[in-house]
Length: 115
Image 1 (cartoon, rainbow, N blue to C red):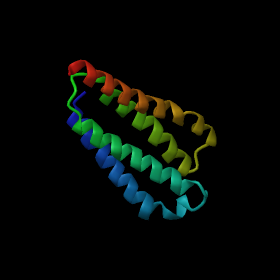
Image 2: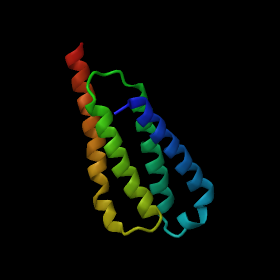
Image 3: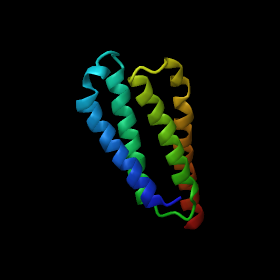
Image 4: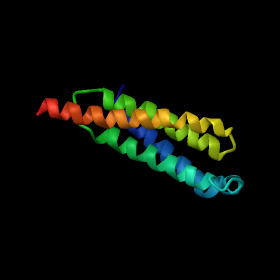
């Protein structure tokens, strides 16, 4: 995986979806009380991990791989629920979160090994 490409794509998607949530989907998101919070959380996590993928300098490819997978699952399920998808997707969201956490732990472990 090319980290700058992944970072650029995830970052661009996060910005676009954040803008759509603030402007284009405003009425749709108003249908569910939790929808705006889900949308904002998804955008924040997606953008945060896009920046992290672009910024890390590690020999291990696993943190960025796990962040791409985790961001996609975590943010994707929240976006989907905010747009009216079934709430059972909320049970899948923690799988993405666990992947994000694992990426951070592996990054710390790799940095410890490299120093």
